[in-house]
Image: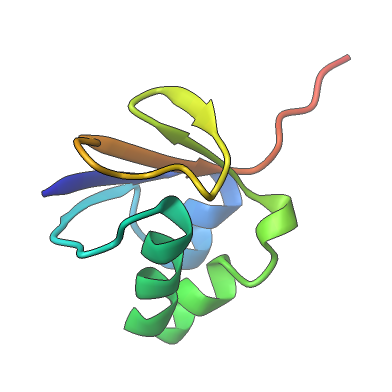
Length: 82
């Protein structure tokens, strides 16, 4: 099981702050594709991957990151500062 967390507008589009899922995904990109196939709301949330950042076990990673042994994947928009 992987804990999947959604933040900001991603959470709003999916309608959940978090969920536990069983996945056969090898990489983050594979997980995103699995999620997009679930329902239209997931496809909408992940329609622009350039606008999404991801962390695996609280470390920022690229979508090519392997998920082997991962306990948590978080999706959130890019952070802005000033």
